[in-house]
Length: 67
Figure 1 (tube, rainbow, N blue to C red):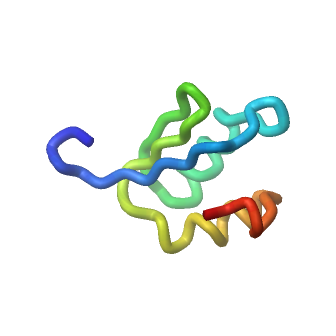
Figure 2 (cartoon, helix red, strand yellow; figure 1 turned 30 degrees about the horizontal axis):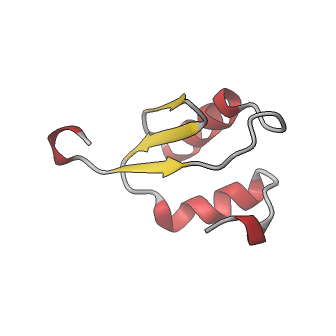
């Protein structure tokens, strides 16, 4: 993104089943970072790819649906 900083994007979440803004709020709190939720995509500042899968499973997402 801007100035070469890294960010983590979470996309493909069904907006009819999950409140994107609420999920973004929980993820920002968990990873202690800033971020936004817009157009069905959650963007978090920083590289959180290592722990993102574990956190999404904790939030109730199926492990098979996470890439």
